[in-house]
Amino acid sequence: MINIKSAREIEIMRRAGEIAAGALKTAGEIIVPGMSTKKLDAHIRKYIESRGAFPSFFGYDPGDGRKYPANACISVNDEVIHGIPSEEKIIKDGDIVKIDVGARFNGYHGDCANTFYCGNKANMDPKKKKLIETVERGFYEGIKFASAGYRIGDISAAIQNYVESSGFSIVREYVGHGVGKDLHEKPEIPHFVEPGKGKGQRLSENMVIAVEPMVNAGSCEVKIQGDKWTVKTSDGSLSAHYEHTVLIKKGGCELLTLI
Image (tube, rainbow, N blue to C red):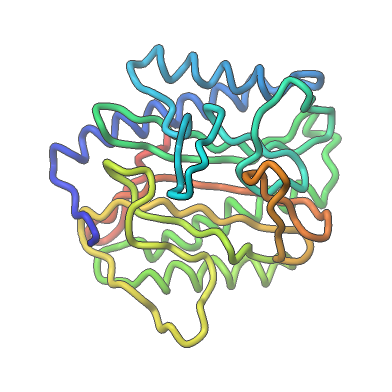
């Protein structure tokens, strides 16, 4: 069942989204060469807890008995998503770092992600710059259709068309989702058109969804690592990730994780 949010629930989710977004922004600002992803993760938890919330990802169980062991997902270079922070994983100059943050406030979640460049942006490889810009722009092309009356497939097609016309590929195995009392609710939000499935669910006012394209510089294929969480590109190419929690309205949408 798809949960349509009440005015009260939306107000709580605005606060959850604000906290998640603040933690993500702060994390992006403090990334420096030589920092461990574990230290970055600790900063994220401290920020979220200081605002009266709790990290959504800590202890998260996808239903198979696994429990996520950190506060945020921090994925570097060819890691697509779900990178587990550690003291051994040191961020280097020139790395691209994907940070995915969730905050639970008064029983509701906010969920957002972004891709950050570590180092002097003036020296950034143009290919990395284009990849990071493409995943963000692809998101915004998609949410042009995040409005009551459109269908999920309208968002999917717009993202896929922009990303692939820019020379990149969209990850298929992982998709966006509804957000609310549960971090992952129905419906699923693919970032590509699924052949034979039509345009899917029609969007309704006060639905809340997470749109989060994952874009690879090479093949769209990915592989799960031995820790059973970290997802990497199969060909070792770079990957970028961008996400907001999106409130569907009549005639448009509101990004609950935009600050």
